[in-house]
Image 1 (cartoon, rainbow over the protein chains, first blue to last red):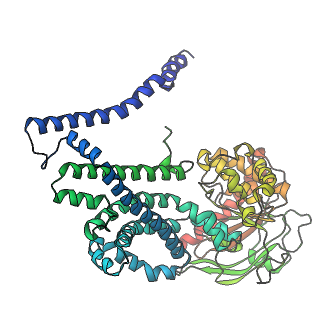
Image 2: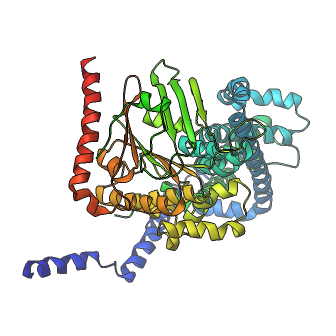
Image 3: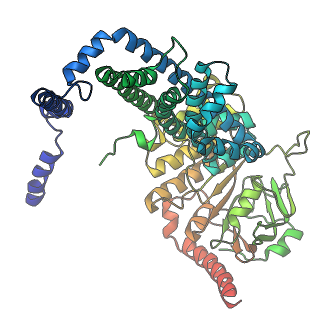
Length: 284
Length: 283
């Protein structure tokens, strides 16, 4: 009994939950450390540019970039809007199309055998190479940009979703057979929910690729007159040696990419948080 | 304890009468010379005949590869037999000529949908028949109550232990009030203590629900503890080598396991099983 008492005490001490103050401090540090690093980098950058008198058409300091950002904010934000609308329309089309085609493949192996090779061919061909063709055929530059962004985002969603619909637990499918379930019930109650983790992966990859697709497409196909996206503004600023604006536009694209990343990660977390291993914290 | 007779003789002759009282009615399911050959040429099952009567608890016992699971899956209608027929003499037939089998199947794994709560998992068979959540609630909660999990309806499978998941699987099987319960080594992956508890649950439910059970197992003791009749099978090719009635009286509880009768019955079944494996070894 004596020994039991002795061993129990330290066990209880280690098992006690961390003090709330410490937990809060740890969370604050998680945010503060990267932010502090950023500030230090910006300070060094500003100091370097000022001390060595680097001309602003080669490397503008952070202050110059902020000034350009404020001065050109109207142009930059309308460009951002164009890029955003192309990216998100393309992603929405790719999600809808990818899921529908994957479902069609899952319901009919013949369809898959016929069309999957073409999906792969489309995927492995760099879109930069297709863009000139699309310019000839498409009704407007806007449509070209949309199609390019769609084509890059579509495939990862299709292939992940196809894989997901095939990965259903075989015994669950047997169970559905025993209860004489219809093809629709099978799809609705097991195949689609079981494919959610794969859909989430497709969504995260597709979201990032849709942005890359819309930027690369605009580099190649140019902008449609008044409807200039961020990529066109970057090219334009580069040609005019307006490097501060170039940096500002670049910053906006990066911010967009980061936002898409967090948004798609958040959606996938919402879809899987209740049950999937990837969304759970390990309990031990 | 056990009278031994050859399965092949028995089928043609008077039906067996394992418990000795009122079980001589028409079989609920009958396998007639059923054989199954897999696509790779393996003969999984050869010339298997088996009559299962209403209310029987039949165990299919044998080493791995003897076709016991294959036989059970054929009875469940999963994949067709290569030769022979499986008849449901007491069932009505649909227009398409399919028997209206009131069966449920319990797999070796719990086979739950991880994205659905316990309630939704048990609701599934009713949902597939078009029963709404509201209309199903009472039956689902009843089924969960019968396996002692009514307090876990809103939990997700990952939050349950292996034994509890298996109970959910059993609740899902019994919620449709089946006549025939098909169980494919349902407790093989569980620890001994949990397994004994679930064995008692199954015996209780079998009594209460009026099921006919076909139970696949590789455990002699499980077969002797549970069944009213033990069908011993051998491998290469999968076939029936003995059909043994088990006369140990019901209701059985854990104490039965320590009686001399239980030991004698287990020994007899073991002997039959080992003879069959010796024959295999000398081939």
